[in-house]
Length: 133
View (cartoon, rainbow, N blue to C red):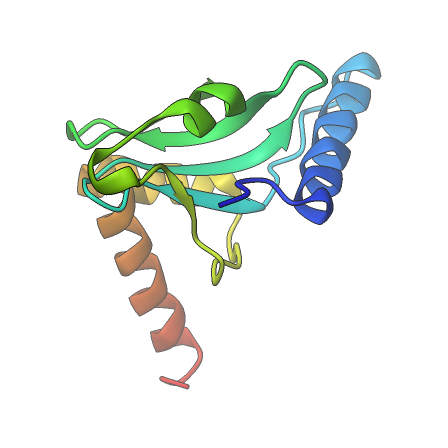
């Protein structure tokens, strides 16, 4: 599976440039909505990414399944090189559409102790405010 398509790469790079420009101008960094979600199909590890720099380093929220999701950087090359049993690797959630800024996902994940559970809570809360639609 191609983890980052050209379209996703463009979005991730644009977010990276926007953050760099804001910091260069002395403004707060934008709180971007995640562009892509990666997951381990055989385990709990999950990543949300908002940015990709010129060296292939992603920025976002990582949850390796130990109960302490963290904001930080991770290498695309490392995600691509992970070899799991049965010939599997890390996968991209092709149905993922970010709904909230990264900080909202991070807060929910920290409270829940899991990115997946935090996402569930956010979706339930969003459905409640949409009238259950």
